[in-house]
Image 1 (cartoon, rainbow, N blue to C red):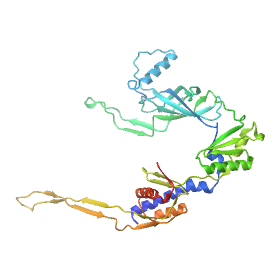
Image 2 (image 1 turned 90 degrees about the vertical axis):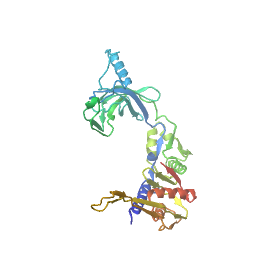
Image 3 (image 1 turned 135 degrees about the vertical axis):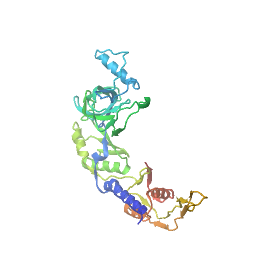
Length: 386
């Protein structure tokens, strides 16, 4: 068995394993409702802020090429009573950064959240830096948290000393691991404002599916009604289930939702083949089926090999010179050994994989074959190219 066949078989088995993990396991085992839906109002909110990181060892922003850093530093010092307006700032120990975080649902005043810090200018590294007090605002412009703390990064950057030989300013060798201009601060922000949302007083609410599907939405509503009552849940569309809070759970919505999210339903998904052409990865869903087709796969391959040889005159000859003589070898492979293969109608992922595996094609050829089968109307699935 050649290397090409081994690569093809490995790809097909990989597709089988991944497809079985992501698709087959979902259909054969019931899933908890909490794992496949989102509850209305229970969500995170994105926060963002602009601040300064100080204490960098010469790896911060260049004041000349990052004027916003100098302006921010000047304004901050003026608020602290230090006037450096119209002064030339030359140090590179300060970096302007964007600070981002997520405010969890029902976060309370005084709670702490993790934040991410990313350089905005031309800083080389945030290692050893300290983020100064930075307000974090939401989409409505209100401040919901305040961040400050030591920045922890997952990478580093180092380079040799610069040389001025020949009047230049060339840098020596350098090495960089990870992204030293981005880091995190665990529990680096304190919640200053709460988002008002009264869960206990709700009379009704909606839940939305993470993967919208008609059959799954209907099964969720049916299971909730079976346990809680016939008029509690209604599937409004493939993405939304409308819930009416039962009378015995009024003012106690938390208990109601905690019981619902533990119910299990059988999820469904459309027949789909996902193709990542860049990496040659193919994921085939369990519900993918194919009609009986005949496939012939073969390519015309022309191989040209240059083997130059040296021609020299006879020993002690007074005429002639050493010459390089070209030698060209051309091989043409018309794929005469390839045959037409029959892929029978499949009723399962295993049958489909076995049929494609019998062809012994390369990953790129397999992608082309799947598209050709789809164009012929024999593939009952959607093809999604990443």
